[in-house]
Length: 279
Image (tube, rainbow, N blue to C red; front, side, top):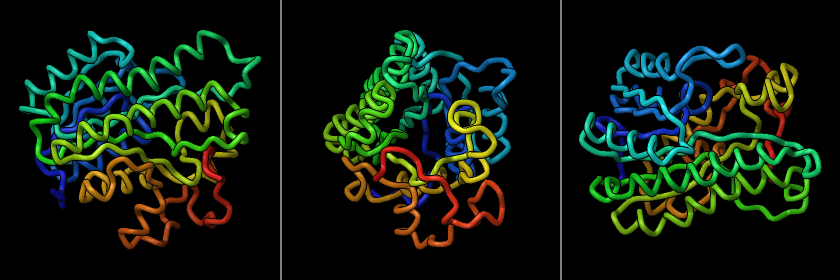
């Protein structure tokens, strides 16, 4: 079943208070979708813009319906509460978006054990457990979807050795998602991943990776959101079990001019900084 719109569809998203997740939520809201957030940011953070509540307000203002569930995707109790609250509020779950992720690009000798565990708990376990908890409701949905914001599996030493801890965590998200594909396909749906060719102007890019200099040669979260929309409305047979690329999805939709996505207007495409994991 191909859905030409997300109107009336219910998304359960991990994270989403800001950045890419929020952009995806707002794109869905423009169709009149329901968006439930499971996120931790209940009060303003000095280095992070927005909270789960401002995200919910933005969804409502964009034309959708929102539910804010304050919680941690590392907690099985919070996951169960988010799934239950979403079903109670909207009658079911059509789409799970695994957006929550922790990044630390430290090399192995410098990576703190607690940070390694955090990346595994949020990126891998959180993706698997949230998706798994939603499976009974996805089975009852028309054209259910699981979408994880993670890269293609690329065993190149360039990525495996550069930041092994983070690479393991992101590849784990992908493996969990592709592993669940068969279960979702059995109900006429799709499970897949999505990743960009260039860096995206988010708090992680500014605060963790490259500061304002990298932000200036990155694209806006809207490019991810528009590609995610194409994935979530595509024929499931064309996307399931695949690791998809943002720019390729847009090209398939006829969008070849990406200049409007530059974080700094006028920055040429060739100046955009390439993201990791793609050769």
